[in-house]
Image (cartoon, rainbow, N blue to C red):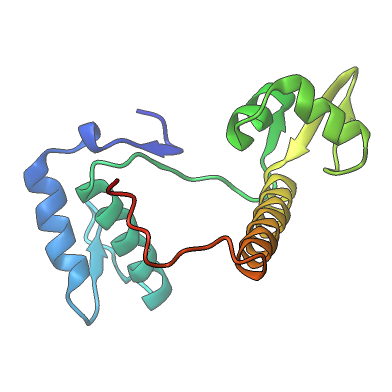
Amino acid sequence: MNPKRLQPSDFTDDEIVQLSRVFARPGHVRVIDDEGHEAELPEAMLGFLGHMLRQMEQRRIITLMPHDEQFTTQAAADYLGMSRQHLVNLLEAGEIPFTRVGTHRRVVFQDLRDFEKRRDAERTRALDDLAREVDDAGLYDASYTGDG
């Protein structure tokens, strides 16, 4: 089992359902270790674990990633859904910060997330501008349903 990755197959359906019930209720959750030491989970931790369990109920894989985790260029490209060469071009153009380890480039996860947010915001702006241009040109027919 990878300590950074939880797959629904790591748990039985009954385990996920039972844990989800516990974390779905408002209130407090205590954990007890094998030696009887007890701790109450803080509210922020309850919300985080509840969110993870809801994702697992939907059979989604959960990956925990520290913000300062360093990615290889291939891993960073895979995360962003682009070719490695395109990522390298973005790095060299200064679009995403990186460091070198010897001759290899490394990209910090938080920098990937920042780039992803900027890219998504730019795409949204571009789509909004396009929709506005289509509407201003009178090319949008709100009554069209596409049924033929």
